[in-house]
Amino acid sequence: MKILYITQYFLPETCAPSNRAYATIKHLSDSGHHVTVLTEMPNHPRGIIFKPYRKKIFIHENMDGFDVLRTWIYTSSKKNFITRILFYISFMIFGLLTALLTWRDYDLVFVSSPPLFVGGIGITIKKLFPKIKFIFEVRDLWPDVAVEMGELNNPKFIKLSTKLAKECYILADSVIPVTYYFRDEINKKGVNINKLNVVRNGTDINNWSRVQDTTDLEMKYNPDNKFVVMYAGNLGLAQGVETILQAANILKDTKDIQFLIIGDGPEREKLHSIHKELHLTNVVFIEEQPREEIARFLSIADCGIVPLIKSNVFKGTIPSKLFDYLACEVPVLIGVDGEARAILEESEAGYFYEPEEHNDLTEKIMLLKNREDLSQMGKIGRRFVEKYYDRKVLAAKIETIISNL
Picture 1 (tube, rainbow, N blue to C red):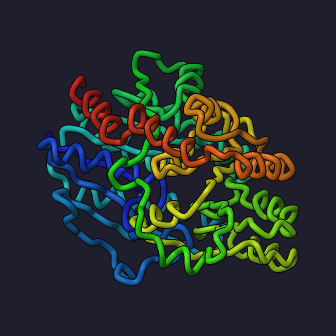
Picture 2 (tube, rainbow, N blue to C red):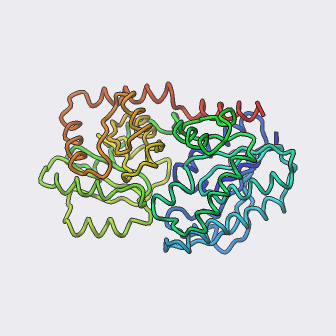
Picture 3 (tube, one colour):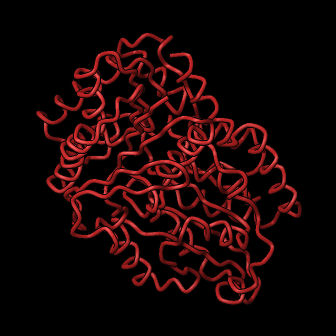
């Protein structure tokens, strides 16, 4: 089967959407399908196109047995309404042009959203080629999240985005939400429940496991063998990493706790300013790391934090880093209520803390620190992920959905 897989974010960008996409694409390719990935010139999270891809309009690559088509987009390190809209719409336009100019008589187009405007490519292709099958994957509810976050407040754009989302749901032959909450919300919008097939996030079991050889990292970041609290991920508005800094401020006189924050993103400068203002000697910022290095960093952690800001929208969100942490045998403190909290509590490998409540986070850090069976808790988390959230198994579910079409 010839499959066009459209995702705005993809490797070498290191983020949850690109990791999920790669696992699905690799499985489909290994299963004998001819997969072509349509994506942007890599620039996430700083909005600066990576050096090898600059001043290029179009690039065709081969990666691990499948094709990758990269197209120009408008991008900017300044994040505001105008730059975001130009970023999203430019990919929709140039992505569609790239797809049509390199058309290969695809049997199926698979669109992974958000950004929602990626769906505009899918529905246009569906209208031009009615016989093609169209799958729309929903990793976040847009425009709901954008409105809740304050990223989208223009009434005309909200109306346009809502109409676009509805058209994607209607025209898609199958919709794949990543949570049951998303499924139910989409169903409330009038989409037939039989067309909604939930495939949750997970992790690459083989790539995310505890690493024994971490002496270099321990000598550099934890030479005094302190209790290491780690966050590894995007430094964005939704993540609410400031809560971690506030907890670190409360614990800065506790000499045997070390906070490590790994990543980059639009909130980076703000967080560095807070770090400086509070004189947090117990917090170290580490620049964004290659995907293959993160497991080594997690292997020196005693505790991993999964934060999001307080919002009803996020009650249906399951951050993929939850599974990455657990796969590396790292007990988790999660500041996300709803489905993600339920999964962690089912795993018995960590605790929930109230989102954006740094006092509660502080108490839970101390609770984990004082547990004598922390290592055993980590092993329990690993077995849980192996059993239920291996991305190979989840990718096979997506292949089954494709086959059923």
